[in-house]
Image (cartoon, rainbow, N blue to C red; front, side, top):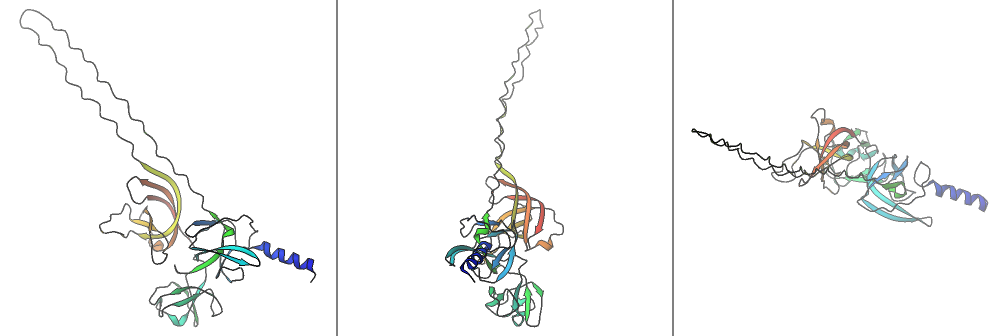
Length: 302
C-alpha cells in the first residue's frame, strides 16, 4: 500500500470516532458527577475506556447519562476523554447459569459479562443472594437485565451539558392600599321644648387589616429521570407530601430522594422500583426540604 493510500485510510478511521453517527468535532469538558445528554445517534458504550474495547450497548440522541467517573486515555497519539456510566436497560448482560438459582446469585463476586461467553468482558458483579431479573435462561449462560452495578464507557465528545430550565420567579403581589376610615358626621341636635332628642352616636370603625405577604413558591414544568417507588421515610417521623417519590439511581449502595410525586394511584405497580422519566409541574415551597411534582406523564426508560 502506498504512503498516500495509507494516509487516507488512517484519516478515515480517525474521523469515525466512537459513534455510528457523523463525527462531532466539538469537545466538551466533563467531570464526574455531572448529568449529560447524548447529542448523536448510535453512540457506542464500551466495556473499557478504549476505542478497541468491545461495544456493549448503544445510546441514542437525547438519552441522559450521569458521569460516575472520567478518564483521559492516549491512543494513536491522541488523547480521548471517557466517562463511566450505568448501562441502559436495553443492554444485554449475561451470567454463568451455574451461579443463578431462583432468580438470585448463588455465589459471591459473580461476573456479569456483555455476552454469553468467557471471551466477553465483565461489565459488573453480583453479590451472593442479590436478586436479578432473568430475561432468558440457558443451559450455560443466563441473560439478565443490567443491575445498578453494571457500567460501560462512552467518549465524552458525544455528550453535552443538560440545558437548564430557567426557574419561574414567583409572582410579586403588591399589598393592597390602606382603606381610609369613613368620616361620619354627627346629626344636628334639635333644641326644642322637652323632651330633648338625644344625639345619635356612630359606631367606631375598625382599622383595615394589614396586607398578607405573598407565599414564596417556585413553580415550573420539568422533565426528570430516576427510580419510581412508593414513599419510604428516610428519617423517623417523616411525613410525605405525596404518596410516591422519585429517587436517584443507587450508586455505591446509596440512594437519595429527588422529589415527591403527586399522581393518581392507578396501575402504578409496573413502575415500582423501575427507572422512569417523569413529566409534570414542579412546585417547591420555601421551607420544604423536597419539591412536589404534579405528574402529567410517566414512562419507563429502557
